[in-house]
Length: 223
Image (cartoon, rainbow, N blue to C red; front, side, top):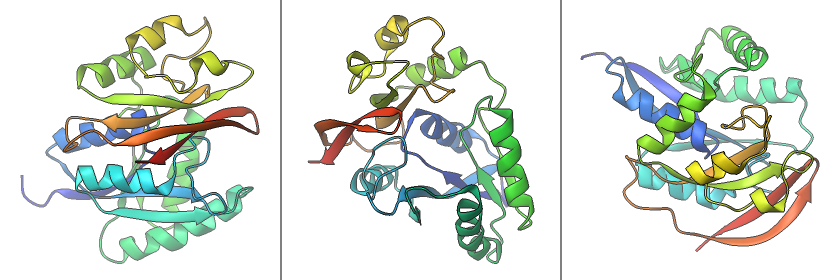
C-alpha cells in the first residue's frame, strides 16, 4: 500500500505499547516512524515503570526504530506535560507527521485527554488496542511471543511476591481477584524483554527494589 500514514507511537517500554506496535506494524495503513518516551528528568527513568533510559534505548535499537525523548520534572502537572508534548510534537507536525498512537485499552478519561491534547496542535490520536477486553490483550501478548518482566506494583494491591517476576500465564493466574490481568488500572507495570520484531532479547540485570510513592519498583540496569 502506497502513501502509508506515518505514525509516532508513545512507548513506555511495557507490554501495552509493545503490543500496540505489533498491531500497527501488521496494519497496511500505517508506518511507524518513531517511538516517543517520557522520562523523569531527575531519575532518567520512565515514570511508574522504573525503566532507565539505557534500557529503553536498547529496546529501540533491537526494534530498529528511532527513539524521541521528552524529559519531565518528577512532579510534573498536566499543564507541564501538555506544554512539553506540544512543543515536541509540533516539530513533527510541521514535517507532515500528524498521527500519534497510544497503547491504552479502556481508560476513557485518558483517551479523551490525549485526543484533546493532540487536537490543539492539529494532530490525531489512534489506539490500536482500544475496546478489547484486557484478557484478550494479555492473551494476544503471549500468543505473539512477547516476553516481559513486572517492574513495579501498587503496594496496596500487590506485594513483593509479585515484583520482578516474569509476566506470563502463571503470573496472571496467581494475581488476586479484582486485579486487572493487564494492570490497566495501574496495578502493575512491565518491561518488555523480547518480541516478534526484536532482533534478540534485551540484556538487563535486576537491582534493588525501592518504594516510590504508592509503588514498589524493581530497578533494572543495563548489562
